[in-house]
Length: 220
Image (cartoon, rainbow, N blue to C red; front, side):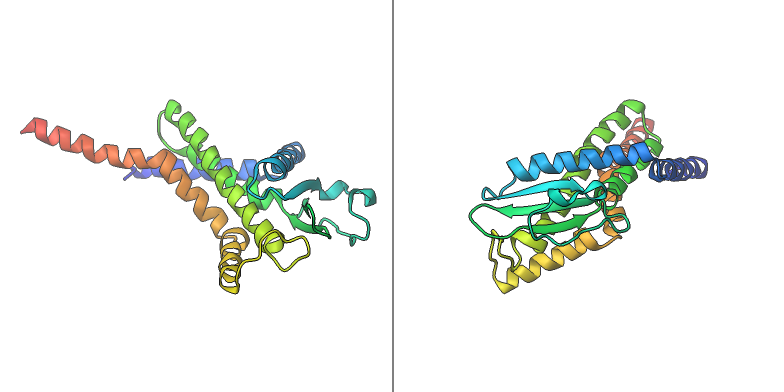
């Protein structure tokens, strides 16, 4: 267990780093939102598991009328919703639209991992590796969240452009999973904290008992 002074320093540094990174810095927010949408375009339009469907990520705050399909309803940015996902299916009629928030879905969980790793009292070389693996795992989580949203809200829903037609049982499972992992705000804190524990803290917790055991044996 960390001494009180080091524990207090960890709490102060992690909270300060989180507060600074979550502050409404315009350039930082726009930059992450751009990467969020660009990455979504690449992954979900070219590499994901639905060969007959595609998703286009658009900036909801600079949307023009010609950007949407003919007959599409007016869609506006509300609150933190800054991204519009356009769902299309080859060979099927209709186009679907889902709003999402790059800040809530991706940026917030990423910042939590960064803040916790930076505040962890370990060597800087280990912090670098922890940050690298933390980014890998947190973006796998973000990918899962977006997949569940696109499935439950469109490609596996009762829509004209649906790609999958699951049974009522699996529809219920998908809906509950999407509600738990995508809509539940608590998960945005729990999962990043668990990832931080795995990439930055786990080895430290196991190393201390091993060192104590070695010193006990040597004293005998």
